[in-house]
Image (cartoon, rainbow, N blue to C red; front, side):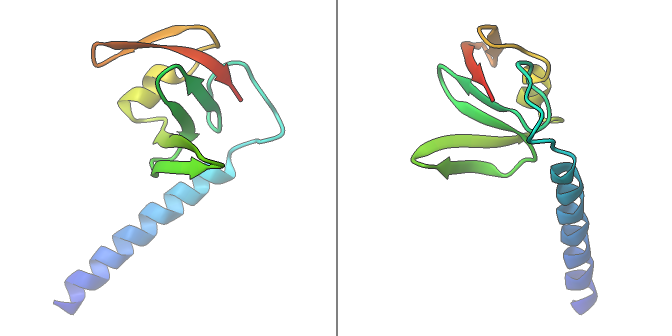
Length: 99
């Protein structure tokens, strides 16, 4: 039983280490109008932080969804620009701003 718990903890440590590696690659000083790793994407329906999958975050009263580049919505948003319309799961939304 203890061995299983140790393996589980080891897997969690690997996951956290991978997230840390991805977050370390974000260049917050270099801005782009195209969605890329580290972009904050505002749409007319939701806001996204394109980095790692961390769920819903609230910053200064505004909700964001932290999503990974490998998620379906992350793959769809990657490379998109402001004012583009994106269709996901049959619903369309417009990108209003990319930080």
